[in-house]
Length: 84
Image (cartoon, rainbow, N blue to C red; front, side, top):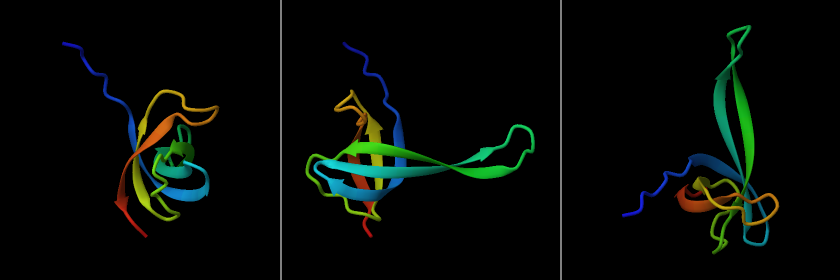
């Protein structure tokens, strides 16, 4: 029996759907500054493979890490959590 590795999953918001089968998702996390101890927002942009082209701008989505699909795409769409 083969042990399946858990892949990273991230929640984010779709900010662009202008490419074919690709969406851009921004995930926002709170981080603490090491010296000043102040919390700040950190944003990360992910290029996500959307095979059925079902996600639209403003949708909250769940994405999962996968093998490289293209130069920038290393994530795939798992499901749409909330539609705008």
